[in-house]
Length: 94
Image (cartoon, rainbow, N blue to C red; front, top):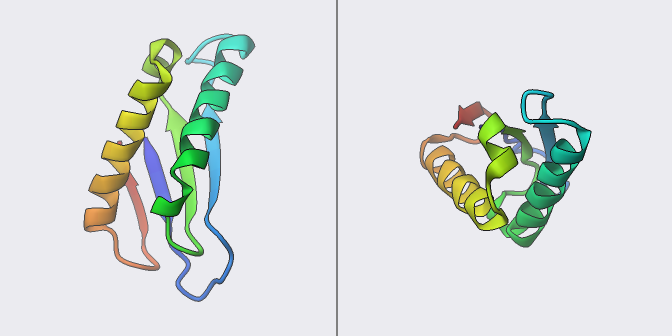
C-alpha cells in the first residue's frame, strides 16, 4: 500500500518512510523487507516530486516477494497514484 502527501510550497526533496507490521513476520523478516524496499525506493527516487511525503506500507505478502516483485508492485502503485493525485491532496493506493 502506498500513501503520498504532496506539499506544493515545499522545496525539500521527497521523503519516504516504511511501515512493516508484525503481520509481515518476525524482526529478521521485517528488516529484510525494509532493506529491500529502501533499495527499490532509492533507485527510483526521481519518480517523486519535490516536497512529497511517501509512506510505503508492506503487506504480509512482501515477506515472500523478491526485490524485483517489490519494485514492480511499487511502480504499479505509484503510477496509479500519480495518475489520480492532485498537488496538496493526500492520496493512497494499494
